[in-house]
Length: 182
Image (cartoon, rainbow, N blue to C red; front, side, top):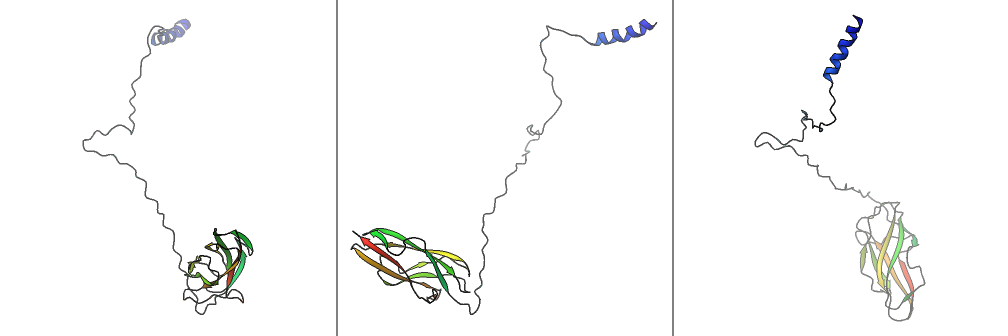
């Protein structure tokens, strides 16, 4: 009887398993449905995601000018063309100075102005970037060396929004000094 109990499950399992070497592989149909199938309802429009526009505005800062503020500047350095620089006759060059706003007024709508001396094709005025009290600013002007050999000096002033000169320490002007060689 013991042999019949073991033999019965073995026969049952052997009847369920069949191995065929000659049979071609078959594809298995999946009952799984994905969300990428086309819609089956007529007139259905699938939702598409559109990226939201990125806002590129830069914030605007309001600067309040204190009442009775004082204008004053300090010339830090010649960034380009130190005094006595040799320039070829007729050559165009850019002179840049670095200033510090040591007054209490922010420099809004301030300008560099040609004051006297050798103009060297300097404009009557050039804008100064807005500069808060205690900040540095570089101010540039494009110039052209005269066509004759010699030493040349052009004088400039810093002016507030009303056209008044901004003192530079105890001075009123600053300059560019070049030597022209043919």
